[in-house]
Image (cartoon, rainbow, N blue to C red; front, side):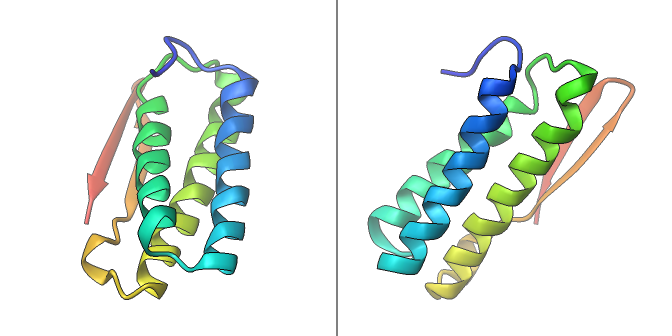
Length: 102
């Protein structure tokens, strides 16, 4: 379940997920369970971008979600799952977050 507003705890969760998934990818490869966990973690983290976020945490949240996106997409690419690689383009203007999947 996504929080109504972002706290530093949420940012830490995303950062730690990126570190864990990167380690699992290096140890086990990016397919199978690692890929499933990575996909769900990315969906959850991307959902955080629509929650209320204090300006003081916004850049940290973007950095954490971006790092997770790099880890997840690199893992998928390395496991020859090229078609599921999604890049999330983020911009924040007028208080709105937009996402585009390529």
